[in-house]
Image (tube, helix red, strand yellow):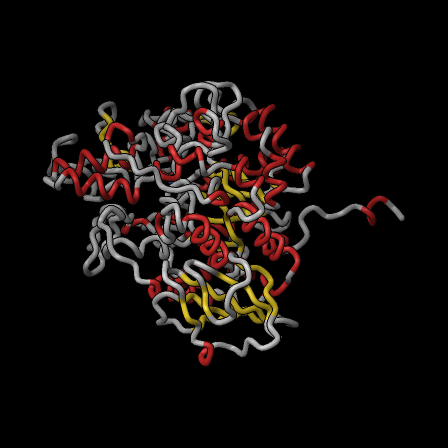
Amino acid sequence: MSPETTAVDPRPAGWWKSAVVYQIYPRSFADYNGDGMGDLPGILGKLDYLKQLGVDVVWLSPVYKSPQDDNGYDISDYHDIDPLFGSLADLDAIIAGVHDRGMKLVMDLVVNHTSDEHQWFVESRDPASPKRDWYWWRPARPGFEPGAPGAEPTGWKAAFGGSAWEFDERSGEYYLHIFSRKQPDLNWENPTVRQAIYAMMRWWVDRGVDGFRMDVINLISKPAELADTAPPEGQAYDANFGSVMNGPRLDEFLAEMNREVGLDEQQLITVGETPGATIEVARSITDPDRHELNMVFTFEHVSLDSQPGGVKWHLAELPLPVLKKNLADWQEGLADAGWNSLYWNNHDQPRAVSRFGDDSPEFRVASAKTLGTVLHLHKGTPYVYQGEELGMTNTYFTDISQYQDLESVNYHAEALSLGLEAEAVLHSLSVKSRDNARTPMQWNDRSHAGFTEGIPWLPANPNYLVVNAEAAVADPDSVFHHYRKLIELRHENPVVVEGRFELLLPDHERLWAFVRTGADSSLLVLANLSREPLELPVAELPDLTGSTLLLGTHGAGSPTVLAPWESRILRLA
Ligand code: NOJ
């Protein structure tokens, strides 16, 4: 046989549908050089751990050169690694190390904006520069003195507080930044900007990366006129980028990117982060016939525990039927065209077990496992965020000085200046701050959870003495091994990948039940999302006679009663 016929294609068509992605937030994962900040050599040393978990893809949050105003989501050089994390040679070693273990590597792609220290923006600051038009520059509002209060071109607010427009003394104009003032938005209307981005992406593909996670990609197309528009009924345009989401040329830009970089042609995995995207938007982006992206991250299910209006700090109760319905709606909406991504956690969200589960010592393990069961048995590509496989919890900081994230720190200052009660603000932070996800990965019970031999940039959660990878790997009943088995189940059972999804008993307030129906088998998932035992309403469920348990969170129990936070995956006869 010729070598061509024996070579295994590393990226066969649609490979990402049966894959599980593991997200690494590099600054909090593993510190090799002892400076208190995670780094690439630290990650390299943990690849065997990821292989043992069984994930297929490793996604790295940004490690590019950056002033770190937003922990690397403000990139000043797309072709280099920040010295905090290591070097390009270290990244090459990770690409090789991941591939040697049969896994793949995804880079974060942050191209809605750059850092204000990126050479493109430095040049753009000069009104005479050919790069002036690479960003969004606008004069003061007519009738206003440039730089005067209220003179900003529109009333848009930035996601991290204050106006979305920053005044630049030198030219007397303002530039747009949907995020911090150190994250100016790129002007995708300019074809030269787009080509520069595609060239950069090709450079990374040539280096060996297998795909991209695209930061706030549905903000790249701005409305033709940057103008104040009225927010939809009952909504405020502060934190939800209302005026700039899902713009008119979004599909066109993504299709162009796909063509120019060869995303589909090379079977690269692509996932777009899309705040505010509806099911319709997601379907048009992920319909394979349109050749845009494989999947997107919806924000709907992680917004349900906030009051309507889009401000995440305004907390609300989340009844189970509301959460179930939202996930089921996305399953149905993308059943025939498009593809779902499945996630509870990432570096921007509080820890799932504290948010949707029960992080008390009694139920932490069971509820973390059950959340995993439910998520991984939906149809789509699951994402595991570092530490989720251990059931890592929120931080429960009590003082503003403990927080590092600019979003949290800015919100605290802004909320207090508006007269909100300090205690309530701290409570919202403790529930929703992004720092909950960013405390160091808990490797063992030694100092700083084995994350660093120095002083960590953010303190480890004190529960590392109990919650850590070393203990979890050694315990066959741990959350880690449950996640490992869920991943294995997906790899071995096509029904987990392709089976049609049907939600049962949508109004049940404690039971999450659904069926996955494939070509030659059907699975029933039953999960008790509460701390009380749950008598199964057997008359309203498919016939359990002859069914077999594929995976459960508890040992043998009553066939008709679920223990607190118990879940079961059954193959129906
Ligand atoms: C989404 C990223 O996930 C978040 O961490 C970041 O702050 C914003 N985009 C801006 O890049």
